[in-house]
Length: 203
Image (cartoon, helix red, strand yellow):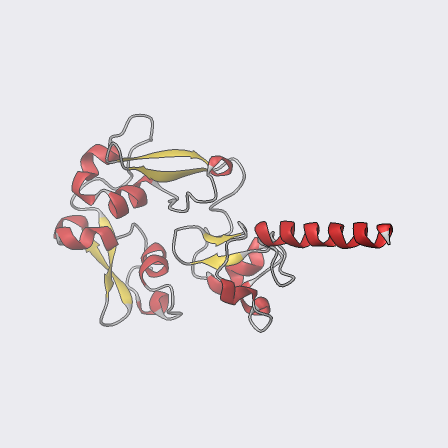
């Protein structure tokens, strides 16, 4: 009886631990899934939406490798499989100073989900009103597109695509949606559409 009680206790403890760490319904914590809310493409932080854990959806949304996830959901984004390599730096908003900072991916806590691959994207998305200062933030390397003639990509909401426009021609209230590439624009603004890239200009 004692051995039986110990076994039940151990199994209960294992089940609780698995639930806390994200291993629900037999879903492995380390599986990769498409992350449409940030600029991370595919991640394996164990925080996938519950519907992805359902048996009918596992094969569609959860993958053993990042490459498989990228090929399924972000084949239009060649940087998907490279964006969060170990040791790579990613940018994040430092709201206290209205600028962006950066640090290695492995130093982000799981709740720090707003991350960007470039300083341009971070400054454009979070601090368009303070872009000059954001791009000039010490030690960040500077933005690669810093003039009004720089080509950016802005969403065409009606037609579901992204169009190339010079930064200076983009209305202030739309700058937050502009991205430095058509793929980033499509990924961030039309993540549900598989046709955005084929319809967009200047891919």
